[in-house]
Length: 188
Image 1 (spheres, helix red, strand yellow):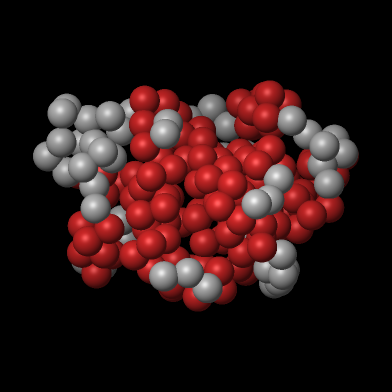
Image 2 (spheres, rainbow, N blue to C red):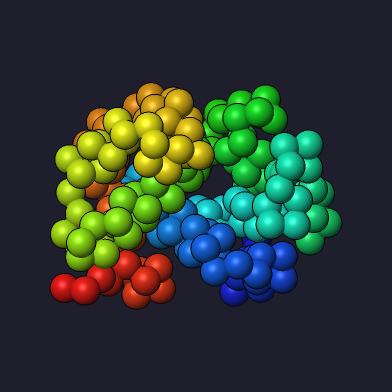
């Protein structure tokens, strides 16, 4: 199995922008925390989070991402369950999310980015004082982060079978653990 160091090397090889690298770290943190919560393989889930969009910067079109990444991951020996979860995180691929890991990846992907955006527009610019209520309020504001698919977020929560407020709080807590790397420590 690919380890975290190798996954980060692959991410950095294909992804140069800071924002996409931060997104990968945020999804990794949420995946690791959920793996602990569910009693699953923390390393495998973390690697899945790191790699889910590693090809996006180079192949941003829906006819290439995550298909090209899947080919690359297969070549370097990444397991089929990780590759299937990554394929399933893009709803348009038609790959069903059947495993808990795949459902969790889909449920944390868009929402992690959305939560980061909400934290950054707060006066404190901090994840540490962010509450689910504020995330829900911004979620209703369609002009805010309008490229974030609210449908995917809702579908992810539904498929994972979790309470919306608890899920948001879980991701907030996950992001707090790497706030410095995400530049979400704020001005508090």
